[in-house]
Amino acid sequence: VAYFVTRQTLPMYSHKKSPHIYSFPQLISCVLLKIYIRNMSYRDLEEFLLSSGEMCRVLGLRGVPNYSTFCRACNRIKGKEIKRILGKVLEIVISRRDVGFLFACDSTGFKEDVASFYYTLRSGKKRKGWIKVWYLLDTRTQALVSWVIGRGPSGDSWGLCKLEKNSPIRSLIEVMDRGFDGSGNIRFGLPIRVIPPIRRGGSIRSLDRILAYMVYMISRWSGIYGKRWLCETMISVIKRKFGDSIRERKWGNKKKILSLMAVVYNIHVIVRGGGENQFLLLLVFLSFKSIKNDVCNRAIVYLKHPFHSVARKF
Image (tube, rainbow, N blue to C red; front, side):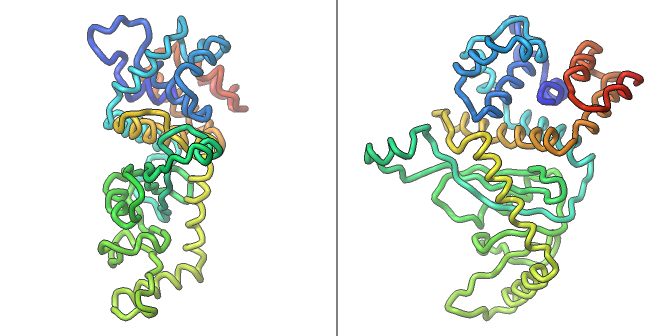
């Protein structure tokens, strides 16, 4: 799935004078694989590919690249290209819908080093900052549609407008916790923001906050607000499968890894939720337009799904 979406969105080579030994989609697919396996180092990724000839054959690699080649490929990818990859993945997960009914948003933090808690405790070094990420989740498909990366410690309220601006899919209702109450986030319009207002001074006095509390209680009684826990579950899955620390040193590379981590999570949703069926149909349809027949056949052979016989008829 990762190789398919990168072939559809990225140029074959990042530079016109590239040696043409490895294509740019192949290298970015390897970087996505690195993130999927608990965000291992580039050296460990090289050793993993050396020990897995089957994986190299799926990706079409004639040889295993050096670990520095993966690092340079990750440095060359741009934010616009990552958004194009996300859009292609969302076409498979959400079936090209332009409007979502219910979204949930939350924030979390990532460590900026790989030191264990025991080493941090014994060394006595105080770590005062971390990377803070805001996520916007479609509760129907559990697909991640938008994210914002910043520094912590900081409040949650300022990241909400950026989440809505970066989202390629418009939402009707958004549910979130009390941390998003601030910076003018309580307003009435589309999307409908369900935010439990904070009782400042022990009571809620202004009219807009009273109405926001009524909207919160109605959504709670109807069960809509209970969908907020899906975003917390998504954050738990990301940290459990991909790790809660970032190895990179430069701030730009940290943002790229976190953005690619969101793409990897959506690919995980495709594999976990039985979306291989939609992916296979889309692959066969697009193979007549832009993908070579050998890549299409390779993806169909390695896709473990009972839809094999129908795909061969196509």
